[in-house]
Length: 270
Image 1 (tube, rainbow, N blue to C red):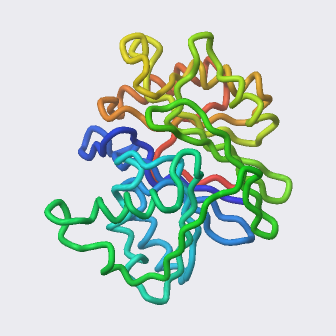
Image 2: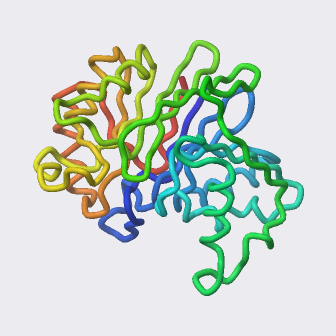
């Protein structure tokens, strides 16, 4: 199993020379298993992934949504495989947060005039929408489970298991006042990898409670309590430039050796 980060920003894309090393695109994660390509969220990072899939001759993918806030869906109209009639894309969401019907309506609405020139019905890819059952979804050797967490309008974390490996993707998560969310600790138990929302520093979080995001300190707490092997911190605030993130990387490395801040193009093989 391999995974690659195509977008690591939260809230809004942040392009420019000050963010070029970590990247300015919003959330998109690619996970490759023997059962094919699984994509998590369709932020602006999915645009680059679309070109890579076409270069590799990939003819289908499965796209999972943690939730449907703008920064997690706005790249889909620029995902070039969506315009290919030979491409098949299955779109998955959790009914308790965003059912298949609501997901399709939202993706369609963001392409409506006058805010976008190309309507949803112009897309030619073979599309199908699916609700993920409460007990998860099976794809031969790959299993994907979900856990509802705290975020305005709702969000889910995903646990991706294939063979002997396991990744937990928990973006846009706010922790309870006492620290690590026990639901996420249980959900992440013994995972190889936890990818966690650390948009704010602890100091910033003090003035941003109820915004729906977390901190690196709580990410480390979750990873330690759950027995996670490696922690990746993502969903970087658009105001955090490369220099700021370099300093933060040094801080989190001292706090939990091996912890990494994500950057676009970071690819990991388990």
